[in-house]
Image (cartoon, rainbow, N blue to C red):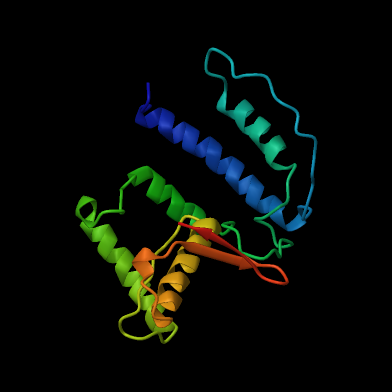
Length: 179
């Protein structure tokens, strides 16, 4: 059964919420890094197991990592360890609305645009400014590189549509052209 009944959902939610609360309570004392041994576990059983046992296995595996959700994680970009972001992701995953096209969820797309406009105003960007929300740093970086490429090639008088990608690095610079 893909969608369990209300009572089962409530029980599972309570179990997972207890796991999450214990995890968050332990963050203050959690080490910044606790690499372990990545042993390949046995394949899943043919029949469903107990959720508590699965969470214990997951918790043990999750504890053998760099603790990106804790107060000692000071890496080059922030992680999604904020509880408010967990709740927002829970809502997004539960409702499962596609906002890549405005016609499939127009009110949510309008809400997203409103937040982007608010961010533009917050940073005193010009009236025509805009933006996008991405799913992570990789897509955000790609979007930034593409935006910079579009802007700079146009400023240089190049036909942006006819240009491939140019990556330059090293001393002396070595260029790679992607068409």
